[in-house]
Image (cartoon, rainbow, N blue to C red; front, side):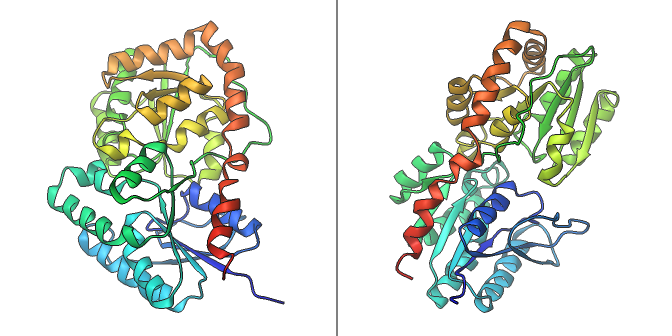
Length: 371
């Protein structure tokens, strides 16, 4: 019996909270591939039971700064060199150096999965020298990538115009739920919900301050990130402890149960570079499946989804008072919530992984048919 072809998927995160990578692994496993996922070991970050594929994680002596990225890619290179692989999937630019070198030496094709546009992330864009390094690596490494996919049409356009690369579109949509959640009646204390990384440029400070204009509302924040401490301090300084609750980071399998009592979801982004401007966060798709209309920033890719499927309200401001007004409308407009009752269901029926993963039917056969 012939051995299965192995796909090795590499990330720089802990694999626990990476919903997209877990779905990709599941799809490849279902198609008969042997899947190995390589990531970083974090304390108390256990891979939940039921995930598809084998998981290999290693620790780093440092976890931020240039030495972290250098160490991680050197270690990843040696691991890839000695692990069996027929195909390597490099998730984002921060793993591509190791993957390209290992792929070259082993004569193994490398597929690039761009979740974000690294040179234009807010954390990189504010540091010109660091941005120069990422742009240099991108120009060095991307031309040799034969196949790739990314999360939005805007990012597709960037890779097409800058590198003449036609990347496939594979959006980060959720699995279709067994039961589509109904939009919930609003109580006397409406709940606003955010899930995702706590990083700069995501409108979190403004969203917290918006609660000052909504004394009977509560904001639940599920996630962690670079500005976790600053956000918690802001809540304390503004005396909003009773209105804002932090859940910390959670495996994505647990997120929906924390959203079951919420009434509206937030997906606000500042224009801090092309990465955010052309982003299409998983929240845009997750919220409808959770029965939540979304209040989102009207950047092009986000606008296309929200307007097409009528899933929420678009904003072009980060003023807390205007965010509060949008939240109030989303929770208290009976007409809107009746309209969303049907449109959220329709969005969930179309925007789910079963439909989206059809891209892989042509994508992976295209790189394996001659192997």
